Length: 209
Ligand SMILES: C[S@@+](CC[C@H](N)C(=O)[O-])C[C@H]1O[C@@H](n2cnc3c(N)ncnc32)[C@H](O)[C@@H]1O
Image (tube, rainbow, N blue to C red; front, side, top):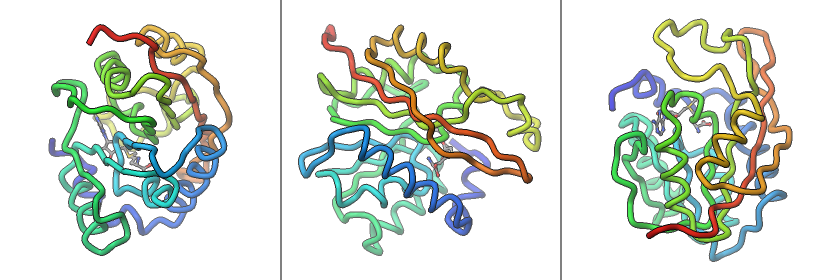
């Protein structure tokens, strides 16, 4: 998938706010979800893998799913350099139209990626299939906003953040339970602060597979 994220990948980490945000989200995630040396973590829409870098010492294994080739190249360079663990896996995965891999995870985290995906049902259904029973999904994304966040990208067809009730309904439709929202920090863009949420929910107890 070619995207402007391919072009932005090489300089993505130059913005210290992104690195700091990943650290803050990692701390919030640690507080919200039990992690240990056996935890299988999937980060979806991983970008350059900043969150996985921050969580590498807290989990047993890391898989980074990212459809942008440019982003995957940055992740691969980090694995080669030892910034990410040598056994970290890099997946070219877009759950909108890809077959769901036959794998299981304990935690799926996705940061600022879902608002880029107009068609969420197959993605949330994919998360439900990829999580083991009692697995946790952690969504960190923009609170509903007025559309100004992507005003500089006329071709943007994603979501203007998420209304919490609406996202809860979408998650419930995919079988997730016990959805809890907490503040997830903020992103500052063009001098304006955009609040984030962290939604943590539990994977469906029963699947038909
Ligand atoms: C705003 S960036 C966030 C990157 C990273 N999570 C971070 O916080 O630094 C959004 C990411 O979502 C990815 N993305 C866009 N559409 C996607 C899709 N359908 N499935 C998975 N990832 C997608 C993009 O390639 C990009 O890396």
